Image (cartoon, rainbow, N blue to C red; front, side, top):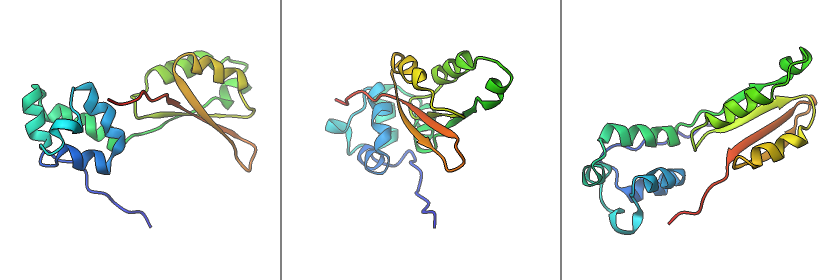
Length: 145
């Protein structure tokens, strides 16, 4: 059974946002918003105090609350004799902070781990029952304030 959570709105306090969606903290931090002093203020109040349009801040929070992973199946490229590295790097560089890149491939792409690690990505590898490698890359998080 899937549990639906209420999405943040302009009347939520910053503490409510962070408590329900901890991944929102880096987004707030990029705008100079933290829980130290403004945790009890609403999103509307904080946006006004920081000169951020409320619609813009809510849209950024929505991206964290409803991230969409990018799935890239490179098996057809490999079967066609094409090198998918450029496509993979372009997809990785286009990710929002809260998104993951999922690569589907027929073998474990060990060299790719180093290539994307140099660009700030960590990974998790999983081989499915049907032999497909599913590699999930996510930007390494930076410590909060």
